[in-house]
Image 1: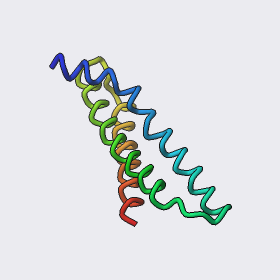
Image 2: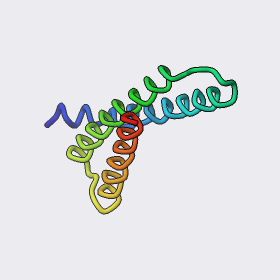
Image 3: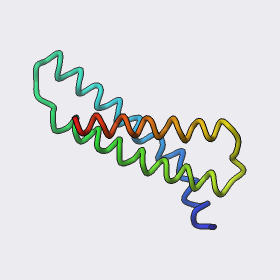
Image 4: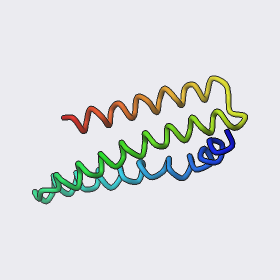
Length: 95
């Protein structure tokens, strides 16, 4: 249980990686639309990176939830909201 608590402490760090990758991916998407260049592979990689690290962030957030004094309705809302966001990324990747 001690190791899960330790890993859970990295949740805030890992949480911001997919957000930054999504911003970068969005900028590449805009560049592709405005300058008519192909950024298909970097956009796909950015979405895949965001998806993978959002799953890792969710796991670490669950570890944090188990280890510390986090409870209540807000935590349940955050868990379901993050699941919906990851599901959206998954369907974007499939498409």
